[in-house]
Every structure is written in C-alpha cells, then in structure tokens.
Amino acid sequence: MDHLQPLPLWDDEEDGLRADGASAPVPAATPASWAEAVGVFDLETTGVDVTTDRIVTAHVGLLGPDGVALHSQSWLADPGVEIPEGATAVHGITTAYARAHGRPVAHVVAEVIEALRELFAAGVPVVAYNAPYDFSLLKHEALRHGIRPIVDPAPVIDPLVLDKAHDRYRKGKRTLEAVAAHYAVPLVGAHDAAADAIAAGRLAQALARRYDLTAPVHELHTQQIGWARTQAESLTEYFIRIGRLDPTDALDGSWPIR
Image 1 (tube, one colour):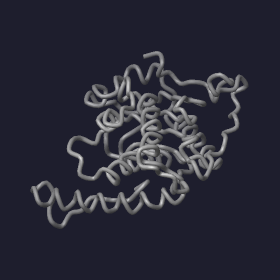
Image 2 (cartoon, helix red, strand yellow; image 1 turned 45 degrees about the vertical axis):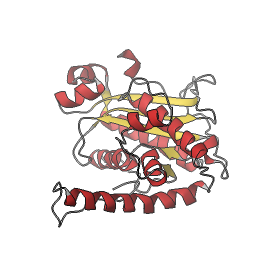
Image 3 (cartoon, helix red, strand yellow; image 1 turned 120 degrees about the horizontal axis):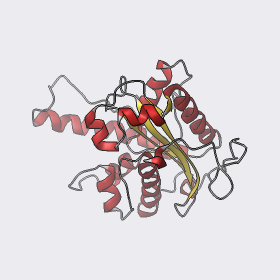
Image 4 (cartoon, one colour; image 1 turned 90 degrees about the horizontal axis):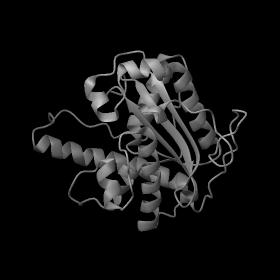
C-alpha cells in the first residue's frame, strides 16, 4: 500500500505538484460550464459516525474537462485510535500500518482543509459523493484538533444528490460503485480515497452532460440543498412505513454539511 503514503504538496507541471512544495495556482472554473474544472474530495475513515470517527486517508485533487487529474494530493494519517477490523476490511489500512507510515492526524486535517480552501477561493466546485459525510467528519476532526473548520463549503457538487434528483425512480443501490457503473464511469480500486474522489468527479461531469446541468454552479449548489432535504424527507417516510424508523424520528437532510 505504498501508494497511500502521504504525497508532497502540489507537485510539478506534469502531476500538478511543485518541486518547492508550494501550492500551484488553481485555475478558476468557468461559471457557465462548471464541469470544465472540478475539485474532488474523499475520506476513508475509522467508521461512519461523523462526530466521533477519524480520518485514515484523504484525497483532494482537480480534474480537467476530460476527467484527467491536473492536480493530486493524497494523505495517510495516524488517526490516534485503533482502526476497527470492519473499517480495515473496507479500505485496507490497519492500525499498525497507519501508525508506521501515517502522519499525525492534526497535520493531515490542516493540510486537507487548506487544499479545499484553495479550490473554493478560486471558485472551483468541489465534488464529494454523499458530501455531508466527508465535510461533516472533516469539520469535527478540525474542532477536535483546534483547527479552524470549513463550516459552509461552497460550491459543492454531490453526484448522489444529482442522480437521485434526475433519476428518482431507478431501482437499485445508490453507492458510488453502483451509480458510477450506471453512467459508465470506471471505478478501479473502490474505497481508496483517490480512486473514489476521481470517480466521483468524473461522475459529476457525466451527470452534467447527461442532464444538461448548465446552471451557474452557485445556483446548482442551492438547488442541491433543496433536493437533499426533499430526498431525506422521502426516505424518512419510507423508513417509517417499513418500520425502520420511529414515527417521531427523521433523517437529517442538511447539505452539504451537518
């Protein structure tokens, strides 16, 4: 798993990294065609609770209009806690490996946040599949380590929300693997942060083409807030009907962060 060891900051022209370790300039997305340049973001973690679980690996990058990675940065963290066997079974990182090869999680959190801030500051939309999970967990990690969190990420593109909004009644799973396959987007090495982030970015671009999503990106961001809320309300009703939720409970439809 050497490929999961932390990479230096943005590399040279060919890979989007600079030899001096400084951040390379990030081109702004064209407002009328947000899919021309999209940031990508994904975390692999110790579990699914955004308030208590920890980051193990992370990826932030930038894709061009053809889905090719223009910039790429991956991190492996020592989360400071045991990585449960169930989480290791998903992403392949053991506690021993993370302790031996990972960097202190506080350093990783700070660098991930800085990389995301650079993209947002340049007006580049950041794609995250099931965005509230990744952005909320990153926020809680930041607060845990005394780092200023991103509390209102924007603009964000969430292929899960877009797919549900534009193909509401399609049967089957809505995992990243399943949805990527439906739109013929390759995903090799699922549950690797880089592989998942890049596939999600390419999926967002495929959705933009399929459904002619040409609205300005900040307008699309706002639309997703409403779509996510409606989707959570619909799923709440279904879960109550089949007895999976108590009638007094409700799923949180906050988006892109909780």
